[in-house]
Length: 511
Ligand SMILES: Nc1ncnc2c1ncn2[C@@H]1O[C@H](COP(=O)(O)OP(=O)(O)O)[C@@H](O)[C@H]1O
Ligand SMILES: [Mg+2]
Image 1 (cartoon, rainbow, N blue to C red):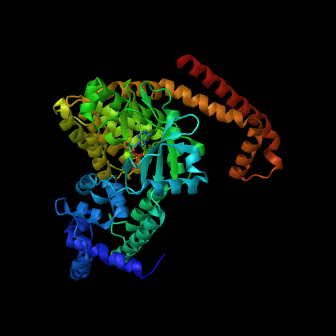
Image 2 (image 1 turned 120 degrees about the vertical axis):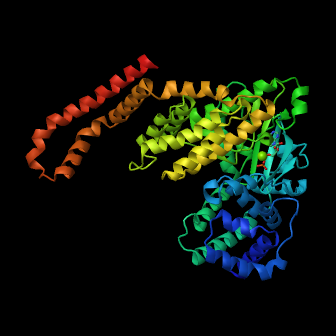
Image 3 (image 1 turned 45 degrees about the vertical axis):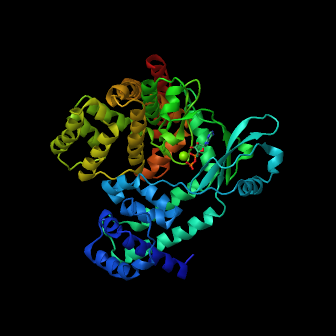
């Protein structure tokens, strides 16, 4: 959607940044080159009276984004998870952005539910409540199901939100292309990539079916975690713009007074929340990536229940193993090993000096271990680690940054329950358990078994596959080697099945 309204948005954005004093911070954060700064200042300055004023009590960038509206706020929130793009300082500032917005009326919400699900709302729900919480994208109501009388939470997207976001995102693309034009190829400045990333994340949040799917997947991966829960999705009463979940009865993790009054063991809750998070991230590679107090409830029996599945993180098995070894290396203060792991995994280019790298890693680890137990942070350790690895040529990985950011948030939650918590002592058993099960002989046995199973599945097709591969390799005419290879291919197939059996046996014995 190109057009004059985008130009107007571009001007209003620049003017607001100028008027709130945020322009300099933004240009700094993106490492904008001098001529781009000059152009931005010269163009922004005369328009500054057209900019929005915002709340002068908050830092400039937060002030500007809050004034510019929901899409900008969301943009800021997403950038807060990308210190690789905006730098650590601005990322920290942005992480306080709250997207509380005035709610829309319950009648409008009911109409949205009726339209999206194609149902008569009063025939499906009773006691449809006024809005309980309202944010930029959606709001939440409670109700009861007709028939079972079961209490549910209903999340409803704001009417017209897709169109509103679309317009702002189109303006973001225009702004990005202008920056691209003025400063092509600036290193830290990849405006188009940044907007595309934002576009992708927001489009995901604007489809509640994806959040429902996340809730269901998270419920499945954590089904056996003791004293932890995820509300069940009611798929028949959920759609693109509506999500219905079981209602979670309990106190919010925000409300320490109520948690105490209910007689819960606060230090134990602190340990549990941290261990659950680590276990889920390591074991399943699927974790809740927005685990602040507002998204956690504690039931009367003391179970921790997670809510809000808009942002989830995923880390593949290989990366999990590598990072478990890295963290384990730090725990044992074996910096040389931590360095080696990076090289073995190919994360750091082979031409870098391993001793220099190990020295830099020691500079990351030692100060943290020297800290008073109540200040130690694994999240901070990872943040420093990523700074060093970036310096040594490792590419930024968004999923790891998301993990690190969430770790900081979860540590904050744990610390709010127990200010004296020793993060290392709580984390160590989880990491050690994972290492024992996933790195070393057990892992080798399991990998072998898995490889064997895959090969065995190809069993009947193996001879043909190998023959084709060999012919492509050698380029020899079909007739000559044929008889020669037949026998050997048979042996390869036998070998594959043998590996499968051996691996399976080994797995049975070791695990
Ligand atoms: N299943 C539920 N049971 C009880 N309360 C809920 C449930 N789902 C949401 N809520 C309430 O609504 C608030 C907002 O829901 P959430 O999913 O976190 O939306 P948002 O993405 O806007 O933060 C939560 O903080 C919680 O108080
Ligand atoms: Mg929430």
